[in-house]
Image (cartoon, rainbow, N blue to C red; front, side, top):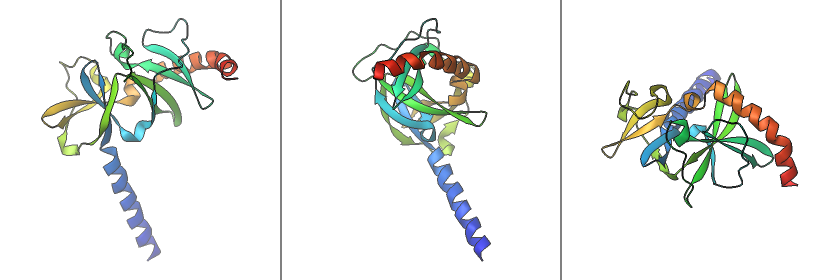
Length: 184
């Protein structure tokens, strides 16, 4: 009897995780609506207090001190090959947890503004187009249909790839002493 109850609880937990996986944080970037699975989002913070890191690619804005941790910040617009995000009062940094080789890393991404959390049923998500998108196809996990419009669902692990994370970690490690000195 106990095994039956345990299996049922696991099934319920799996169903709950599946339901959550269909929730997405939507945000604007260059006038287009994008989404990231809510399970990848740690928090949303106001843009500011960024330390620039010299000799980094254009899409790496710098690093921030987030409760004592050095978190690299990526400009998604520049990462997609467009111009850097213009900073306004609505500009935010979304802290995303990215998993690589069973390790978790926090990375901030700059967005124009955060919209809302949407639930998009799996039946309303189309596969990524092989052409015609304004960003690399491997950056797109799918195209969600919401109110007759498409929302580009990003593949976080591809947008913030292992190579990029290695570069970001190297930059963050180099800046850690500077950030610690600034916070004291």
